[in-house]
Length: 508
Image (cartoon, rainbow, N blue to C red):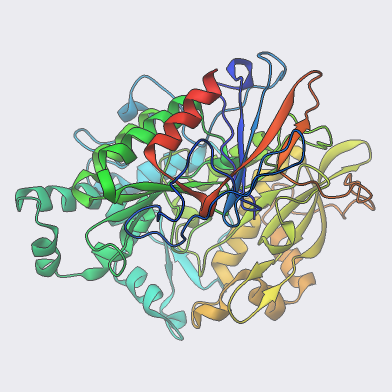
C-alpha cells in the first residue's frame, strides 16, 4: 500500500515542500527513535539500527516500516487549487457544518430536525435517488438506511449493533460522543467506573468509530485511536503541526501512525477529551467522520500527485471530491453510513500503480474516449484472511465530471444488495459473484444521472512499459530544477517531535 502526507496550504500555490509517504521501506526523518527502543508503550515493532548506504545521493534505509518522501515545489507551479480534504473552510465551525449550539459534531439541535438536516446535506450533490423494492434496506423517516426485517438473518454482531441503534444518527448527529464525554468528566474523569456503569458496551467500543474514534480495550484500555480522513494523503504543515501538538499533550500514551491508505491515526486519546480534539481538527479542515467500521475508507491516489514526471492525471481533485461526498461535506453522509462491510476506492494517476487498484472495491483508471478525458472502471478488489480477489473491469467508462456519480452508483448498489451475514463473505466482490458482472453493471448504470454507462475505452493512458520506481533516494520532479526525496518512517510510527520536524521542514 502507499501512504502519503502531502503538504499544501490552500492549494500548491502556497506550498513549498509536499511530503509523501509509502509503506515500501524505512528511514528516520531525523532521529525517529534510539536503536531498539519501541515507539511507545504499545509499539508493534522495534526499530533497528540504520544501515549506512554507499550510494551517492541516496538515503540509508532501515529494515522495516513505512516510507516517506519529501519534494520541493515552487509556489505557483500548479494552476488548479487543491483543498486539503473534504471539509469546507469557513469562519465558523458551527455555521459551516450545521452544528447545533454548544455541540462539536455536526447535527441538528434535536431529533426533530434530522430529516431536514440530512436532506440539506445531500442536496448539493444532485445525485440520482434510486429506491428499489427488492433492496435489502430502506430509508427511514430521518434519512438513514436500515435493513429490512426479512433480511435480518443471517447476521453478525456488527449488524446487530447497527440494528439496535444507528451509529451515525445517535453517536454523531444527536451528540452521543459529547454526552459520553460529559458523563466521564462528571464522574471525575474515571473512565473505568463510567465504562462499567454504562449499559451498552457497543456505545463505548464500536459506535464511536463513526466519529473516527476506536477504543483500544485490549491493547490500551481507556484510550482511543482517532483516525482522520485525508483524501490523497494531503495535509498542510499547519495541520501537521497541530496534530503534533495533540500527540505531545498525550505524553507517553500518545503517538501517530501513517496508515496503508494515505491517512493518519493518533493514539492515546481519552474519550472525555475527544470533542475538543475533534473540534480543533475541524477548525483546520480535517474530518474524522465515517472513517471506521462499515464505511467508505480514505480515498487514495498517486502519492506523487502534482510533481510526478510520469503523471497522467492529478488525482487530488478527484479524491477530494470523492471524500467530500463520502463525508457529506463534513456533516456525515446518511446515504452510505450502513454498508455491509468496509469499502475502498482509489484514483490511479501514473504508471507505477502505487494506488493498488487491483485490491480496491472501486478503481478509476485514466482513459480518454472520443477525445474526452475520463476513466475506465475496475470493481471488486480486496484482500481478506480467506480470499484475495483482484478487481475486474466493469466494462464501463465515465467522464471526469461523473467520478462522484459513479462512486455513488457503485456504493449504493453494494448498500442495497450486499451480504450482511458471515463477515468473511460480505465484501463487494462476493455480491458481484452472486449477481454476475453484467447484472451488477446494469444496476450501477441505472443509478447514473443518464441511466446508462458508456462502454470502456479500448485503451487506457497508463504506459506499462515504464518500470515501477522506488521511493527511496533523490528523484527529479516535473518542475524543472526541483527534486523530491524519498525518506522512510519505520512501521509508519511517528512521535510528536517527528511530526513537528516534518511540519517545520516543509516550511523551510
